Image (cartoon, rainbow, N blue to C red; front, side):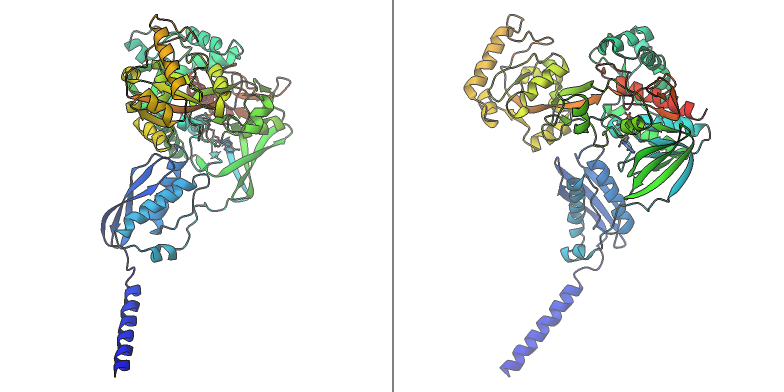
Length: 587
Ligand code: ADP
């Protein structure tokens, strides 16, 4: 009897267990749920909405992933999750951490809606890959690269009714244009007039030539300066770009404030609007499609060989090809080939697509290259990612640089290349930027760039210290040496001169806490050299002759900036020459 009863109990338990596993997942419960995942730079937070048991919407409440890479991955995975009602989405290559973070955040939210681990594990893997390309395509114009130059070129060509395609090797438009501050120098803008700033095309030309040590191609500089106002008007009136009202910035090397700053002080204002305009004009953009070679018939460039999903495809261009692939700051081998100083010790501020592909493809068809050894470096970047720090602009308000030994080693306001090379030579290839409340209160850099500040804090690359002792101890710097360096600096500048390094700009003491200490390194930033073009953006061969059917614009071109590009000149350059290339290719 007892045995029977036990068997009955076991049976009952098994039935209830089966029932339990059957009811483990019966669709999500309707409602709104929040979830979090750990991203590369901090938490990724989402709000997931469930309607009729299915995911109806996902809002990314906050994230601080890498612009142009991590955030793009998040966007793609969110869209795919909503489309498929499935959370098992393939990672985006190059952005695995961000991809995992967004999936984790979505699942965290859905767990609150009844989602279970068993259910998530049972979901089929959804690929983000696009459908395979055909073997060949026919277009009038092929643009290589969907950065600022490529999009501007495509728009101008498409406006004339031409059939235009852009091939872009990454999964999103933008390139370095996207991660820029979106500033564009213009001579004679209404904003200058409103602020009583007197400027001229001639002065803009002179500043640019001087900044490039007069090694620039004067014809290209003139074209850039003469068309700068027209480019800004085009961006505003035809593309819908919004520039910050009443903001006129003066970057180093410019005699007057002449930079208009895109809304949000970021390149996404430019890229989002340029991409929307290109698409509305019917431009086809093929992402994850890498151009590898140019084909010629009787000397004329007539098609581009691309690779997508490991498959080779030929894009024919009846009118011409425009190379707009950006620079080569992310290609260490190429940097070393042209300027051995910038080897693997240097990270790069550039996006991963900046590998010089366009330069190499052009060279294969006989293009001339100019100024290839001129590579610009930026001194205060993230030692883990190479990305430029805006918080570190506290340097311009008086922050000093010290090394691991607690000593100063350079004039903090010197040339970018001098400071950068000096930093790379210090212990660990890094330096510590140190500032006090006196300095923070001038520029409020940690407040203005709060998102960046939090990212650096999460990576323990910036520390807010109560005392100099605390700051030194945090990064294993000798407390005595650091204190002695700061005492000597404070005493020296009391007389208005920095006796050790004759530092220019603002001299401010480092006395009042809290103190900030930030680990920085130098990164390669902009490559001035590239393909030789004429004032019509036509590519020239080594005899100075035009290569028919081939145009180039943007950072892939050499000669505009000489030895050194001034701040705000990159965007002017790419928009002006991108438009010229697009207008001429259809002629
Ligand atoms: P620019 O400022 O001159 O417009 P960007 O860096 O903004 O240059 O944009 C260049 C774009 O070209 C990037 O999006 C980059 O990924 C893309 N690109 C680079 N090489 C290739 C290639 N081989 N095929 C297709 N796209 C490429």
